[in-house]
Amino acid sequence: MLFALGLLGVLVRRNLLVIYMSLELMLNAANLALVAFSRFNNNLDGQVFVFFIITVAAAEVAVGLALIVALYRKHQTAHVEDLTLMKD
Amino acid sequence: MTEFFFYFFAAAALICGLLVIANPFSQNPVTSAMFLVLTIASLAGLFVLLHAFFLAAVQVLVYAGAVMVLFLFVIMLLDLKAEERRKLKRLGLAGGVLVVGSILGIFFASLARSPLPAGEPSTLEGSTIELGKRLFTQYLLPFEVVSVLLLVAMVGVVLLSKKDLK
Image 1 (tube, rainbow over the protein chains, first blue to last red):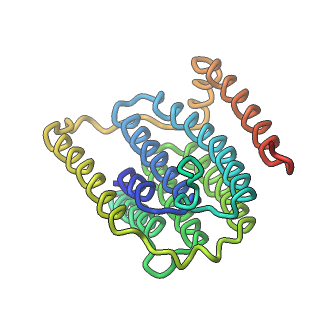
Image 2 (cartoon, rainbow over the protein chains, first blue to last red):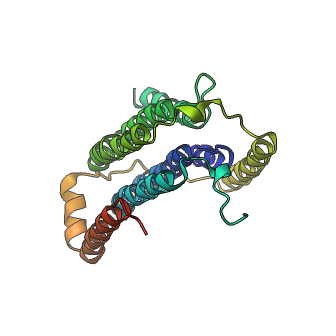
Image 3 (cartoon, rainbow over the protein chains, first blue to last red):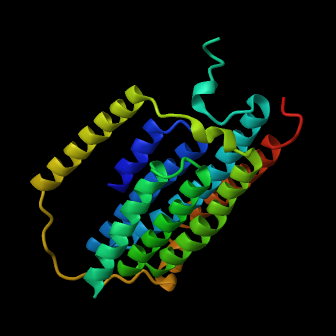
């Protein structure tokens, strides 16, 4: 359900920042499923995997937000509809 | 007691997640970020219920702490007041709901077809000691590679945020 919410956010919202938050929602949904099944199967590997996912997500957010800031400096917008450079 | 907390945290996570993407009262990204913090906190509560104590702590520290501070910094930097009055497009909304609805349908259909066996109660404890032992023995190579990845991300972000970006 949380994953579906995140996917809906990516598809529907047009603000780059909110799209990023929706991506975080999807990652968190995957994390929750991994932890739950690691407990269900009595296996700690799932939790190690979640640890790595959290690390990679942190790096990804840092890079993505830096990209958004650079984009905003160039075009003064954080809206995907205004970013139609390939069309013009 | 545990069951009550499970339902409480699960409902909180879902409701706050919904409010992140579609808040009827404001389209401001700051409110979305705040509800994302609440979602992450309730997910940390769920991790505690699943006996993954270390991951719950990491979730609060890294996500609710570091990542959300980064989000709020960027929101403040960009000064997004003009974005509030935009309307959602009908076509995009309908398409999104259709796609997500069909994915949810597939998910629940497959869940209904494969009932999980009840199984005996789990004895797994996600303690810091066990997790640390795994990380530094079996998963030592991925651990080191992740540290290199963080370094690469840091250098990349510094380069990206230089003033004269070519």
